Amino acid sequence: MDGSPATKYSKEQLEEMDGARLSALMRQAKLPSSGITRKEQKIAALLEGRVTPEIKAMKNEKRNPKRHKVTTPVSLRFLRGPLRPSPSNPAPAPSLPAANPIPGPSFVDRPPDDFAPEGFPYPLMASAPPELLSAAPMPPEPPDEAYLRGQVLEFLQQHAANGGQPAPAPEPEASNDPAQVQVAADYDAAMEDYFNSHPIDPNDPLFYMGIAHPWMG
View 1 (cartoon, helix red, strand yellow):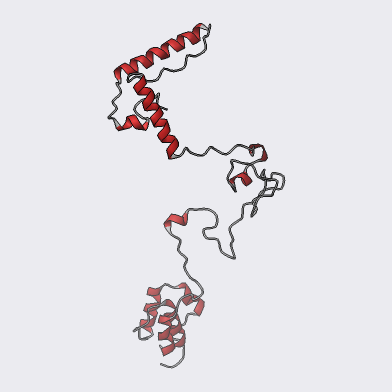
View 2 (cartoon, rainbow, N blue to C red):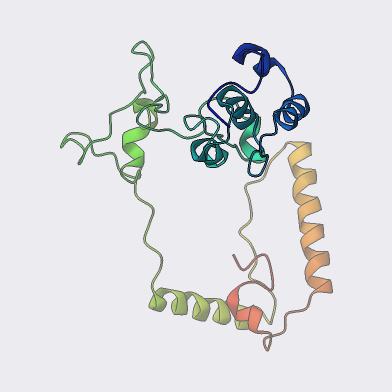
């Protein structure tokens, strides 16, 4: 065919038609339909009056090359706010108002020379308010092995001297308060019942570890 239009319709009228109507017009104009599947191809063929290689190549063109679909995972689809901080969309940094500063000294490489409270490990002491930084003494060193052996030996000697019974506790100062007298009597009775029902077994390894009986602190 020559390059004359194969239809009396204008381009705007052809764009308003659906694919089936355009295919019918192509059959009426006896235009080949091989490789003509898109609406744009049918309109161009009807306006051109023939099917050119350029019209056939339109089948492989992207409909909108600038458009790209961005999918979001279902787990993140309903979250609000920025999903991923980026240079163009940085995450907001938390800020503290100047009227409410953090109490206590700021974090520094080393504390000042005049700021050395005992009992607080650094940098914990640097983040605590000043009223909590009292000069607490350091905890005592744990007893060494010789001290522990001496304590065990002393206990065994007292235990043997008392005939297998615990060493008597020091007598508390006498009190005239009836409530305190009753508490002391109840305590003595409870301890006596306990030791009568829990005889000491020197072969028990817990005996030497101070676990078998509460009075072996």
